[in-house]
Amino acid sequence: MTVPEITTAAAILRAGGLVAMPTETVYGLGADACNEAALRKVFSAKERPFDHPLIVHIAELSQMNDWAREVPPTALRLAEAFWPGPLTLILKKQPHVLDIVTGGQDTIGLRMPRHPVALALLKAFGGGVAAPSANKFTHISPTTAAAVREELADKVDLILDGGDCEVGLESTIVDLTGDVPVILRPGMISAEALTNVIGIKTLVSRQENPIIRVPGMHHLHYAPVTKTLLMEMKDIPVFLQSLQINDLPAAVVTYHQLEGQQIKHIHHVQLSNEAASYAHDLYRTLRELDNQKFKCIIVEAVPASSEWDAIRDRLSKASAG
Ligand code: TXA
Ligand code: MG
Image (cartoon, rainbow, N blue to C red; front, side, top):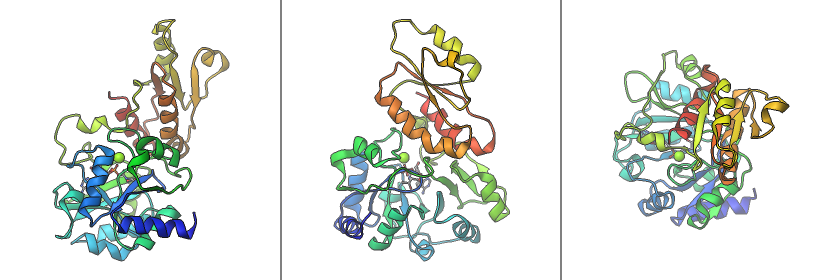
C-alpha cells in the first residue's frame, strides 16, 4: 500500500465517499462516522436495515472519549490489552453521536483494528470511521479485496487491497454498559481471555444486537446462498448416500483428516484442526464453494471447546437457513 493511496482514501472519506478497507478480521466498508449522508450510503450499499448499528473504528486510545461519554476502568484495561486488535467495546455514547451510527441506541461500538492499512487510513483521516463488514446484508463477510469487489463493486469509491485477512472472523463484541461484561458476538478473543484481563467473569449473550427482537433475525447472518448443513462426522456418509445419484455433487468441509476411500465421490475441502487457522480459511472457503453452485455444502461440526466458540457461532448461523 502506497502513501498516495492512503492519502486518496482519506480524501474520499472527507468528501463523504465510501472506502473498503482491510482489517485483521474482515474487510470493512468505511465512511466518516460524523457524516450522515455518507453513512446512509453505507446502509444502501449493503442493503442493510437502519436499526443495525455500526462499529466506529479509531486509531488512538484517546479517541475513546470522543465517542464514549463513560470509559469504565474495565474498558480501558481491555483496550490496553487487546487494541489494536479484534475486539469491539460497547460503551455509553457521547450525545453528538448520530442515531444512524447507533441505531438510535444510547451506546456505541468502538474498535481499534490492527491491520497496518486500516491504521494508516484512520491516522490519515483523523476521525472515526464507521465500518460494517463490506458485504451485502446477510452475506458472508469478505476476507479478500476480490470478495469485496464481488459483493459491492460499483457501490464503493475505493477498495484498498491489504491481502488476506489474518483472523478471518469478525471481532469479539463485548458490552461494558451493564453490571457485568457480556459478549454479544463471540470472536477469536475468548471470554476467558477477557476475564483474565479484567478479573471479572464475562458472560456470553445469545443476542448479538439487543434491539433486534425479531426471533431468529440475526440467524440470517453470514450465510452462503447454497444450502449449508452442519453435521457430525459419523452422519456425513449416510447423508451423502441419501442424495440422488443425478443430483449436483455436494461439497464437504471437514477438520478431521479424511481417507482416500471417503473422498472418492465428493468435493472435499480439508480445513485445519487448529481453531485460528480454521477461522482464517472459513469464509474464503464458504465463498468459493458458494460460487461453485454445489447442491449443498456439508460442514463437519467443530469441537465444543471454547477456542472454537466463534467458529461454532458462525457455522450455526451459516447453516440456519
Ligand atoms: O471485525 C469486525 O467487527 C468488522 C470489521 C470491519 O471491523 N466489522 C463488523 O461490522 O463486523 P458489522 O457491522 O458487520 O457487525 C457489527 C455488529 C452488528 O451486529 C451490530 O449490531 C453490532 O456490531 N453493534 C454495533 N454497535 C452496537 C451497539 N452499540 N450495541 C450493540 N451491538 C452493536
Ligand atoms: Mg457484518
